[in-house]
Image (tube, rainbow, N blue to C red; front, top):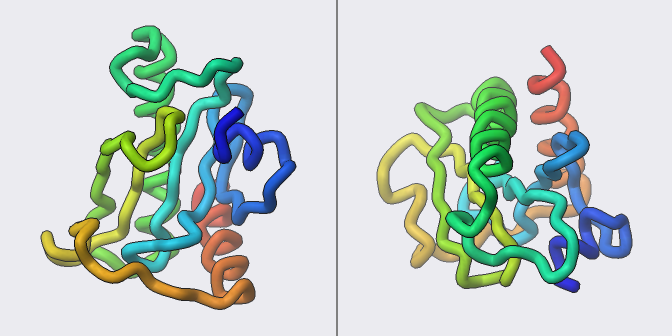
Length: 134
């Protein structure tokens, strides 16, 4: 069972921004930018760890769900765009990074990660969740 499955199951706390029957979106605890969000599918064990191993329908649904989350991020966090990255090497569970950016370098995974307080993380997650609901 991956750390993402444990987060989806509520065994590990997270800063949830959105959820439906098939996907879960939550703030990255080591963000590149404020509002950096992970989108993960809810998968049976063993979890798929490569995005292109997903069935076409699930992959399509994931992109539509990510679009809704990205619109919420853009509505809550000042940025020019919400960048998308799929690397998939960090955790063996399909996941997509949605990162608010104003310049190309904002999305470099070589940049130092931010450290935010629990209160700030909760505030960011709540503001994104509210923006998604609009």
